[in-house]
Image 1: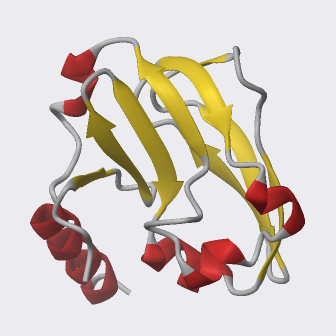
Image 2: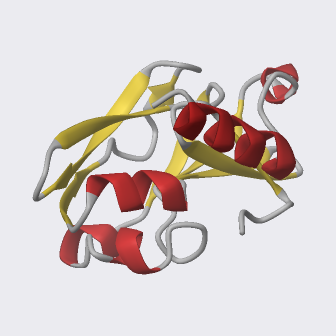
Length: 130
């Protein structure tokens, strides 16, 4: 279910790494837990994000949730489509509804992230603990 080429966090973000650029988004699990997404707040290009720190919010009919950077880096672009169509996060969370593109600051920050298989195992473990 989760794309094999992505890396995942336990806070339900993903990153796709292409050379020294990373594309960040939220997982299908996150969008499903949030419900209908109505607003997304993202930082501007040029700003710097720090691994494990909040860089924006996703607002749904249920709640407002912080989004955390899986790795550190300089923002190259924020997905402007989400300003007019935040519901894209519900329909295509691993594709068209990416949040940020960043210039990776330290590639070694990718190492502790989860593979798709590890992330799916983590989700099963979390469901079992409820």
